[in-house]
Image 1 (cartoon, rainbow, N blue to C red):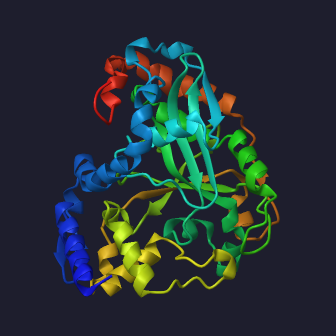
Image 2: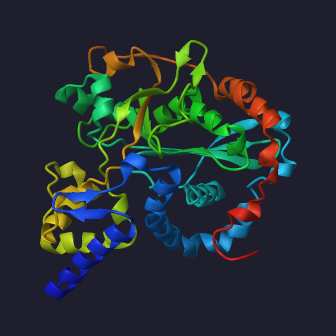
Length: 378
């Protein structure tokens, strides 16, 4: 990349920050986080969301009318007839297209996940419509609230992080979202079926770094989209608090760069810098977006604090059994998994949240799938 192209990229980065509502100072980015509403946060993410939708458009727009057939009309839903089913998403399937399309409607940009991945649709068999999405992938290595909750030492974390996954997308789609089906989807993460899916796909597969098979999924983590979460709060089943709040992120990350800038930043770093991966099994490329962005900021003579955007998210942990922390700290060889089936959890969610909300608030009936269309008209 020439000097003039590099200068142009630097100017584009600074302009993009200002367009997203950030103020630039000597110490980096600042944002009106003290008075931010959910709409403020949506606007902050809007540029990245528009970019992701446009990038997905060539493959998904021709299928949009087909995919919208599986989004329910609120007036045609009988909540007492809802029959949830957990569907594993297979690569190259219609379910995968629907998963990819639905996640583009989230209020914040949703990644496709990293490394190991498990994806599920929560389906309404009676109405033959999509209720929600579950996407699990490899966790980030450093997540302070999670690591403090576990009580991890360096060696135990190195050995047991393979037993953790992170929910990169989790929630319900309308009209089911309006009747609290998001809590059903969140509860489904805790099901025996999800643990079995992990064990069958990854449990016996040795990790590339340690050469050890993970066995059981012990912990799932997730973060709220808008600061404190109302979706995950007070999700209980029997005597268990399923989602446990363990603190907030520091407000760092890469979403301000996911609006078309990242590809050019990657090109710059690939030409001007070297990856820092220290293990042959990690491959020869850069380890993650954080490494790429950090190197790009340095090459562009921009503050490393530009990775600090100030948008903090609440962190939740979902232990998949009892004595999980002792297992993750490598103090015990196993833990006792919970064995609640998706059927049992779904039945509870219908009675506890969905039916009462549908009876109290009929506004879900006004939703029409056509309002979800992203590109043009039918």
